[in-house]
Structures are given as C-alpha cells and as structure tokens.
Image (tube, rainbow, N blue to C red; front, side):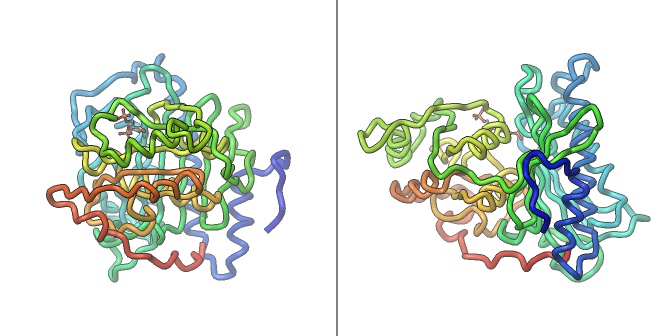
Length: 360
Ligand SMILES: O=P(O)(O)OC[C@H]1O[C@](O)(COP(=O)(O)O)[C@@H](O)[C@@H]1O
C-alpha cells in the first residue's frame, strides 16, 4: 500500500483503488459501495448546507420506527441513500434506521453479494439549530443462499463487518471509513467536489481529554454507572478530570474524541435499560472504526462487536473511544438489566472471529 501523508493530494477514489490492489481476488464490488457512499455524502452535504434556504428544515408529521418525529431531512437523506444503492448490483438488501423493515432490491435490478445498514442522518434533531449531523454506514457480506437478502444477512455480529464509516456534516464535510485496514479520513474540497485524503491511518490518542455524556439521566443511572462517571470526572480523587464535551450528535461527539482522545458514553438507565442508541446503525460501525484506530467500544458487559443481534432496531448501552477509558467500564460492573423481549445482556456476547479479509 502506497504510504501517504496528510499533504499528499489523494482522492478517495484513488485511495480505494490502492486498498483494493492489496486483495488479488478483489471483484471491485466493495470498492463500488465505498465510491457510492462518497457520492451520497456529497449529495446529503449539499442538502444540509442549504437546508435553511430550501425550506427543508423542520419536522414532518410522521414518526419513525424509533418513535421519533421524522425531520424532513431524515426522509430526504434516506431517499438519497436508497436511490444511490438500489440499482448498482452490489447489494442484496439494505436496512435503515428510518425504515421499519428490510429494504429489498427492486425487481429488475441484479442483487449483489453485500448488505448495507445505515443511519441516513444521525443527530437530526439538531439540524434546525445548525449543529453538526452525520450519516453512518455498515457493510456485511451476504451469508445466506439464494440471491435476495434475508434478515439473517443483516443480523450479523459487528465483528463480521467488511466496511464501516460515517460522513460528518460539520465545519467541513468529512468521510471516515475502514475496511479493516486502518481508519482513514477524507475532507470534501467543495471547490472541486472531491473527497481528499486528510487524515491517513487515524490513531485515537490513548491519553483521553474528553468525556461525552448526557448527565441529565444521572438520577436514572445505577450506582456503578454514577461511580464510573465520578471517576471520569476525577471526583473520586483517583485521577485528573476529563473535560466534558457533549454536542448531542453522536457522529460529532465521536469524531472529536477520535481525533482528540476521549470517551463517549450512553449508559443504560432505569427508564431505558438498553440505552438509546441503535446497535446496527450506530454502535457497530463506530465500534469498528474505533477498534481500527486503536480504541475500543463496549456495552458494559463486553465488546460491542461481539454482540449477536436479534432485532433490526435493537438498542444498546454504548461506551466508545480511547481504549483505557472504555476498559475502565469493566471496573464498575453493572447490574443485570433485563428488558422485556431483549435477551439478558450478559449472554448476548460470544467472541466472534473477525470477517475473513474481504475480496474487495
Ligand atoms: O438527547 P440525548 O438523549 O442525549 O440523545 C442524543 C443522541 O441521540 C442521537 O441524536 C440519536 O440520533 P438519531 O438522530 O439518529 O436518532 C445521537 O446522535 C445522540 O448521541
């Protein structure tokens, strides 16, 4: 693989090709999915940047499967992703945080050998106040027979992801992704409409600076979680306090901690025994990126990437970021949270072999 620095002028397309060359039996299909995701990023960035002028701010009258009011841009972003991928012959099925059920490839289009799971616009409740939002994606290889995608192809443990990433619509638009060969960041140069390599081989600083948590839920946290948060804040005299930074947009909070060192926490609480964030669309892809950058991600019982999913929209507690800070969670063992219909968390973990190196 060619060694690049942050100043080399390398487009994301060229970088994807160079990574593909590392796999002699590559078919180019996974590369094609990454190209299309970069295109999706440019199209959604364009909508987000002009949202205030184009009367696409604000909510629709609809509620999504998560029980959240759908923002107009949620629907637009979801449509952009589905329309970009449903005819390319690379996917056999998709799943979106905004759609209740599996998204099948329309009749007439050739199904491919991968599945795509995505959160079209994470943090969308922040759009109207111009706070950074993002698109998150996760790719798995089809494991069932037959040409059409099945639920089983979508409900795979995160460790089997062949690619994952996010696009952040912030002060600049950035795409960060991994195919298991490190995590790499690209910045969109709007003057030429190209994502250029700006952060090759990202390493999350082991020394954390930031804590990202919404402590409005503190009264609903179990005691071990409160003790953990006191440790992060240096309130138990065991360490120096982390600086608290919380945007309320997962992608923006994660990105800051990925580059600056820190830990993002969305613990379980008595009202939400499984926290809020979605395992398939949010936790799995960011956990893959974090691990590829030398960080970690857990749900309080074990690695997020070893959780066997059971439902498309299942939620999970999430601790994500610098490895030492995530490992600290295990020093404050949590009580067993048993939510109706959701398997006992402790038993949801079975160490999973990573996905075989993809023939990209
Ligand atoms: O308001 P809370 O409870 O702190 O939740 C904030 C979290 O919810 C989210 O907004 C959920 O995102 P969605 O917009 O994808 O539903 C995350 O981005 C963020 O980390």
